[in-house]
Length: 268
Ligand code: SF4
Image (cartoon, rainbow, N blue to C red):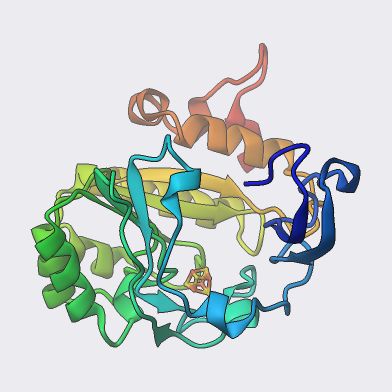
C-alpha cells in the first residue's frame, strides 16, 4: 500500500489487464518504480525471494477477513483464449502461503486445482484448516469419482465453478458424473461465446446445463487488449441465460429483450 507524502526507495506496481487504468507516477514518491504483471509485461517476473516467499503481510489489508491461497502455478492445458500457460507455464505444485490471522475463509486461486499432481495434499490441508473454501478453477474434463468425492468433503463457501468453453468437446457425461457427488445447484458453469462457437452450439451447451440443473454463466469473449466488443446476440444471450428466472421460464427463442424483437430471429 503506497501512502501519499511518504518517500519510498522502491515501489512495485502491477496490473492485470493492458487496458486497466495506469497509476499516476506523480502521486508516488519513490526512487524506483518497477512495473510488472500481465497488464504491463507478461514475461516479467518478481525477484526469486519475493516469488517464492510464503509470507503475506495482511496488516496492510485490515478489512480483509479471508486468506488467499495457492497450491499450484500454471496449467496442464493451453486454451487458445487464455494466457496462463504463456505466463506461468505447465502446472507445478507450490508451497502454500501463510494464512491471514483474521481469516474466516480461504480463497484458493489455483488455475486448475485438480490438475495439480499434489491435489490430495491440498485437499488435506484445506480439510485440516476447517475454514470455508472458495475454489476458482475446477476442470470437469479431468474430474473423476475420487476428485468429485474429495470436493464434496470440503466446506464450500460458495458454489463450484466449472467451464464448458469449447463446444467441440462434449462434457455432458463428465458433468453427469460430477453431479452424482456434488449437488447440481452448487455448480456454476462458465460458457464462453463469441470465440469459436455457433449459435446452435451455444444453445446446446446452455440447454444441456439447464436440463442437468446447473447454472450457466455466459461470458462473451473479450480479447487481451479489449478491442473486441461483444455482439448484440452475445449480450442478449448472456442477459437471458445469466438470469435464472428467465432461463427457467422460457427458451432463448421466446426471449424478447426489446420491444418488437424476439431472439428467435437470430435463428432464422
Ligand atoms: S484450463 Fe483454464 S487456466 Fe488452464 S489454460 Fe484453459 S482457461 Fe487457462
